[in-house]
Image (tube, rainbow, N blue to C red; front, side, top):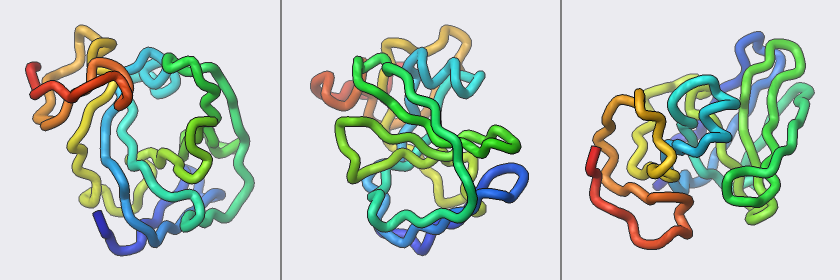
Length: 146
């Protein structure tokens, strides 16, 4: 999917970014790690290419072992705490940009949900077309059943 340059940043404005490449996937993740770090039902993200992503400002990082078993590094603003993006050891050429930090929220339209088997019981239904029981490597996508 090709989009105009994406821009955004943290809540306090000390970290800003620009991305001028393709968006490889727009998704929501229901894994317990994403729910806990976001304090809500899911993570909403855009999978983008790291090489075409530029940011200004200082970021802090926090690394955990994700539900997938792989290290997951989350980048956030050290001043206001806004979660900005995350990377995994699986593919350093990509990063997952948090949809909520985009300047133009209308560009986000998720077509995939992952870790659907971990969905919070209080999460409201979505109209997502592809649903994976775990990560995208967990087998064929199921039709939406929520």
